[in-house]
Image 1 (cartoon, rainbow, N blue to C red):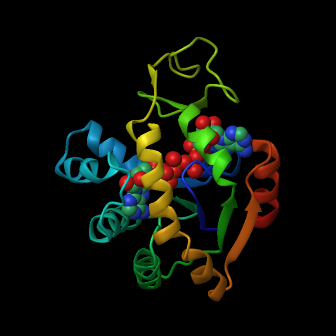
Image 2: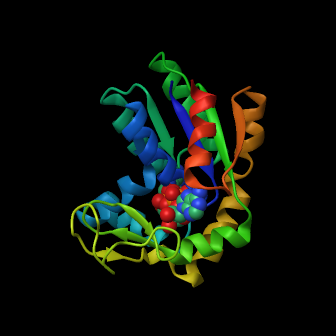
Length: 211
Ligand code: AP5
């Protein structure tokens, strides 16, 4: 099944995607990760995206949609869209694209987490610069401070996880991404999952929904 995982910044989309990849042989398309890779590679796309990401703003739809189309055209099945679509225009473009490819979305799973918990998750999140593994200084610390358990890479704080940027990201989510709940309710694909529980409990519920 092809899935959309959506929710506010810090809702746990990346964490749940990681488990689905490992346990369900699924393939993740994370627009945030694609942009971060482009920034690391200093490509034109990366330079354009960085200006928006560092401020906590959404990257313009035209840039995001073109990038996702390129990835899907490489051949996709059993994919998880993590962080895309993020606006109604992106959701409409995705529908058109999938129609052309004779593909569809099975479920749009919304991870629901209260704002005060999101702040704590985002300010405490740390990520591996090398392999992208995600940690949290309290709930999922690395064994050695600043060193990735998986690859010994350097573990850092994302630029957009600084307190002053998080507010802008949460506002962008409320204004542009929250309306997707209605979009997918109308399409009969919406399912909400309480994301404010132990990671494994959240995963178990998602697993039930997709099986
Ligand atoms: P992106 O990278 O997609 O960021 P995001 O949506 O803000 O989501 P996050 O990665 O912050 O959070 P998450 O939900 O994946 O949470 P995670 O699992 O890491 O996008 C970054 C930027 O790129 C955007 O701001 C925008 O500029 C641009 N962009 C990307 N896509 C775009 C698009 N489609 N259109 C326009 N612009 C776009 O978890 C967070 C923390 O919580 C971790 O520390 C984790 O360990 C912890 N945690 C997770 N689950 C639990 C749990 N159940 N209990 C306790 N702790 C938990």
